[in-house]
Length: 226
Image (tube, rainbow, N blue to C red; front, side, top):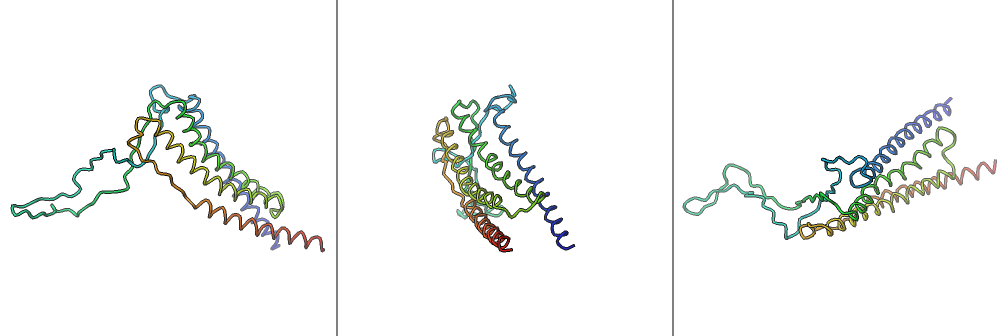
């Protein structure tokens, strides 16, 4: 009875994960298709009077960008030259400051680079969600502790590590290319960023894959002995 309950609980959890992965995949496909058919892609959904065919890039302003933040310190000076605050707490405005540049009529090269940038992340999500869905389905149809699921876990770890770094690199390069080939090139200071979290997450998944692989091997040895 206990084993049946455990199997039923595992199947229920697997079904939940499979449904969730399917939903994630659907949104990922939508995230890929929408830019491709939009104003910077095939222009199927481009609105003549809209802003579909427009590219926006957010970055830090360069020293040539003159930004007037107004007077952050509401002060008064008396006859003796003493400075006092007019009833408000002192607020100092500073970094980080970001500015956005909108390319109202992007070139073909800018559109291609922008499309690669936009579809890279949902494509990675789709590639990761697919093996997760397959693993969850194996829980419903049979035994999840198989060599095929071990390979899927290793594949997921590689996708998370390499894909996560690649997506960020594509975003950095795309921003630089788009801005440098625009009239706002001298006003932007696009700085490359590196997020190490995909590497750490991928290593955790790789450790899980290694443990999973050892468990599968031990059970195969036990089955062979019996």
